[in-house]
Length: 286
Image (cartoon, rainbow, N blue to C red; front, side, top):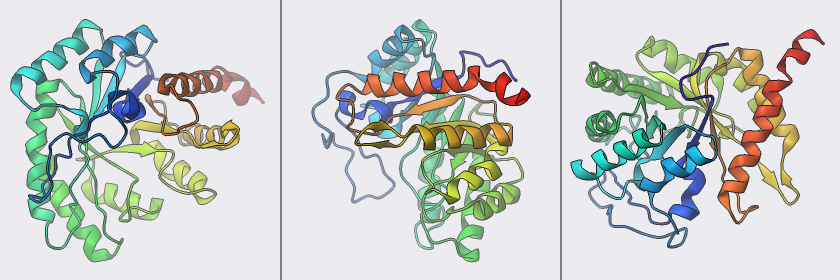
């Protein structure tokens, strides 16, 4: 197993969306406004304070959704990078939350907008930038269009120090067939952020086993019911990661109202994965 700088756990700012409150809907669509909105309430903390809060809880990697950045000004970007460094928190991924490289009419506009985020990701010190591969149905035409534009985007990122990755997400990538086709077509120029919660059970388990060997990072999202975390589902997802040979970091994605304090859900998932990893030697000898 590889030894990871800053440990095996990250947290996405999405897992703290109620705590953070306001969002800024940055978009390539000129009809959308980036003026702050509060769909999840006013919030009680600032993004710049999250690195210290993470470090205090034993997590030293962070992913930030683009809409959680309250400013794109160079001064703010520098301050946030400084806060990360002061807490020894690695900026794992900037998550660019809009755009559609598969769209027949706006793909070129959208991917050019995505390219503008490369410099922002680099200024933040982010290792990676996750973009949406496509939202259109997985026709051959749409897949080829997405691959073409993502290949162009990868070229724009060369020399920036930022690795572009996509996710098994939205209509374009409903199964490992399309996901693997796209990665093969991109020939290593674009990486994979595998998400445990984007595909539906029961098909998702074999699907994860088929793609997670290619993943560089993982959104370890857990499902919750009325009694709490769905432990059986979470364990099966982790088993599929193990089966595929995945040994990268796990980004804790908490997206449930079950715990009023989002940190409780995040740390529960962290403890669950830690227990699973500790049991790995026993599973191998069983």
